[in-house]
Length: 505
Image 1 (cartoon, rainbow, N blue to C red):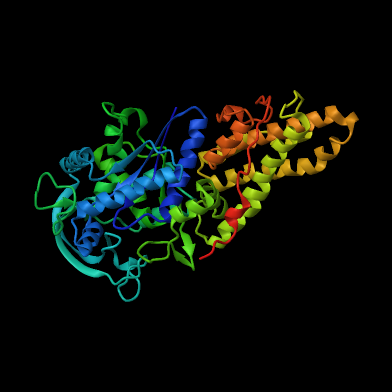
Image 2 (cartoon, rainbow, N blue to C red):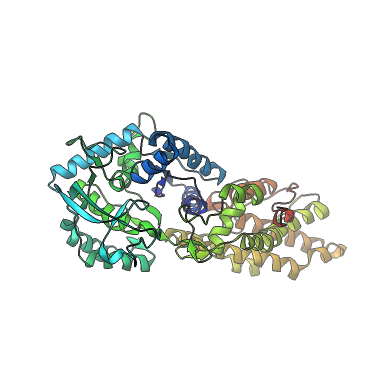
């Protein structure tokens, strides 16, 4: 069983921001969960480095596009480990093997009769690197995403016969209603298809910063078609001397933001059909992180720096907040105040306090030794089927509901402490056996929820499981009662409250 998950490749015309972190974290949670299930997992991310926006940004700085690409690609590469993301490969579209396979695949598309030469005229957004249809233009000939005035472009290009895939794409959506999710994005993509597909430029004649067209050296491939193939090209060279394509293709899940919906849910499957390549199984489209009602975007200047957030709160807190506070798949507002509130009320007061109380009581009352005791049937009923419920949610990319299922049990364990009052039982010599049972149940419950939290909070979960003497993170061990804790060790504060204290400016 294999699980292949991809993020979009991030554009290198500027530095990474929280929106990039959001997509990467979501894909990493999915990848880690499927590793827990014992599956062969491959997680791909990387950078998109060709096209007009990169060339323009480089020229504005007085440097060559390759220098800017090299500089910013390293910033994106550095983001992944700081997020504790476990990606298996980081692709750059300036990688020579990627460029060679792009040329081979798009030559195959041409040989199949889906490419012709013509002239394109229309409204163009240099920041989107995209031509806009008349019904996609805001008042004043402005881009609906970047709010800048569009330019009228006329250019000789080679075209991709997107129109030839009208019926095949409609059939795809009819036969695979889970190809795109959430359902609102499925409907949006299908509506675009049904509105009538028009052929689109495959190459650019005025640009030189791109993958060379092998049959016409005066053209480079339009950046989107170069980029859309990275998910396929990466598998052929991600591991030295091994081609993973046959084993791992197609992607199980491709995770994107809604601003690139059309390219990944219409153009990409049509291009793969034209090349005779199997289609991805699912495309999940998440919403925007909003600040002051606007999409967080480097070009709009309203971004939170994920590196600064991580420095203050830690990667786990950032991972938790983004998938807890913003329902995955919807737009959601973010702020520093909201970070601090989630951190203090849930990570510090609920999970951190549960871990601290459980381990402290075992150390204080039993020198860290956990007695063998049966599971409390009341607690067991509340945990019944939890791993299966979490897995079912994650199979549908429902990362926020999966986290809510787990968190309900974190709160249940905190209530269990209040209900069974082990601090009072410890004062009654006749209640020693009952105290042993309560503490054993608490420790086992804490272990079970921590295993399920590992994809979301990998560093904190590993630290906590180590303190419990039960480092196994496999999903098979996530059921209540399936573990065996013999002795616990001190852990200290998992989520220090002073991290949420406002810092002096």
